[in-house]
Structures are given as structure tokens and as C-alpha cells.
Image 1 (cartoon, helix red, strand yellow):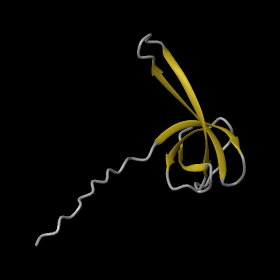
Image 2 (cartoon, helix red, strand yellow; image 1 turned 45 degrees about the horizontal axis):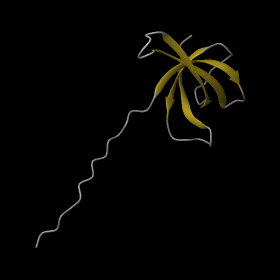
Image 3 (cartoon, one colour; image 1 turned 30 degrees about the horizontal axis):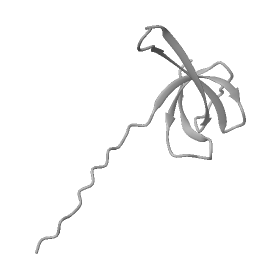
Image 4 (cartoon, helix red, strand yellow; image 1 turned 90 degrees about the horizontal axis):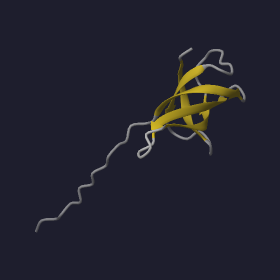
Length: 91
């Protein structure tokens, strides 16, 4: 007698790494980052800009002010709305 085993194929997706601009420093551990994405319309070929704001958990030491460009990385949720972590400051 042989038992059939189920082979599950789990595909692990890479976490999102996005670049954005700080639009608000809320407190010591939270900042709000605006990420802008540009893409071409499939039919009309016009460049379209979309943006989205993310609440980001800040573990990195240093001074961050409004207007800084930063890299953020998707990770384990810290709260209901914070699912991104600050990686580094670009400028």
C-alpha cells in the first residue's frame, strides 16, 4: 500500500521595495511617504502618474524631515495601516 502525498508548491513573492518622498513625520517611529509611479497608457501611449501614500515604521536612526527621498520595504505588519519599513535615506 502506498500513500499519495500532496506536494504543495508555495511561491514566495519578493517584498515590494519602493522609493518615495517623506510628506509628514508623525512621531518618533512613524512617517508618511508618498510613492509616485509613472506608466504608459496601453492604448493612447500617454505617460500617466499615479501616487499612493504609505505609513512607514521607522527603526533607522537619524534625522528625517519633510522632503527627504527614502527607500521603503514591505514587511510584517506593525499595525493595521503600517506594513512598510524604512530602509535608507537617499538624499
